Length: 322
Image 1 (tube, one colour):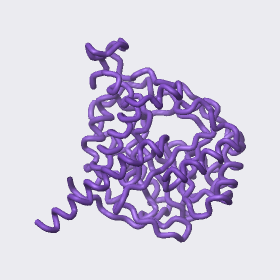
Image 2: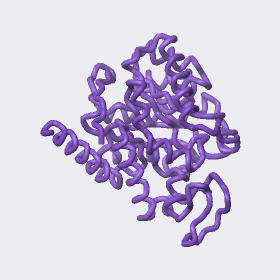
Image 3: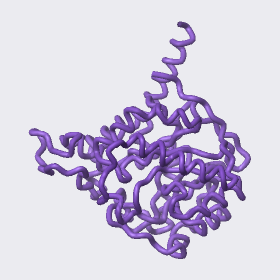
Image 4: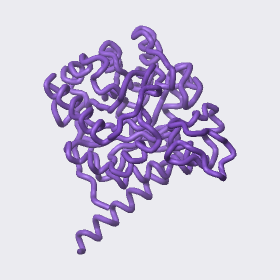
């Protein structure tokens, strides 16, 4: 295991060190139709209450999103997205003055209003493909900007043909986003890369990315990885093969499909086997070089994060002695 490179990220005047330990980004969806929680936190008061709980459980920052990316979802107007997220961000900022809050959006208007309300990080899953103006917001407010790799749009990414070489697509796509951000005046020290697991990638390709995550070190930037409650994790936990077929021991026959039908029931997603699967994917991502992991179940995943960090620390010590 190679040690992760260490980076210093400036978040609203606070220096946050990435790499000495893994940071946990907690997901807070303020949507009526999220695949992960089925709209449980659509009510602003419930969303804020859950955000506070996530921090008590050990989250390092909160990622607030007002637009679902579930399969078949459609983009919502900026005004509706703002109506969902702004009350939550304002309240969390008052109650959690030192905790980073990121806004998960692809829209310039939403990003700017969210930053004015208290968000301190921009998380753009389109990697500046949907709205290049997002880079201008990051430049003006000097906020960190997460650039994710995505193929297609919400409506098409789960139906379009897969690329034959996922690493070529991933590296060229991230390079495009990075160049777009730098050209717009965003400082390199503000940028974080996300390989976009589950977005326009087959089951096998998602595991190829996790297993080869250290290839992203060529960019010289911190890496954020989100595996939490993704269908490619659920499929393998349930006995599915990497080629999209089910195993003989699986009770659920899925046939030669690249995507596993998502368990959208919140109780099913919290089943012990699926939580263990999420934890295993997080550990693999950290050992592969992830600086930040994006999770739904902070309390359930944090022990795995600590074990992975301990392994990396032990490796660093062994290397010094050697």
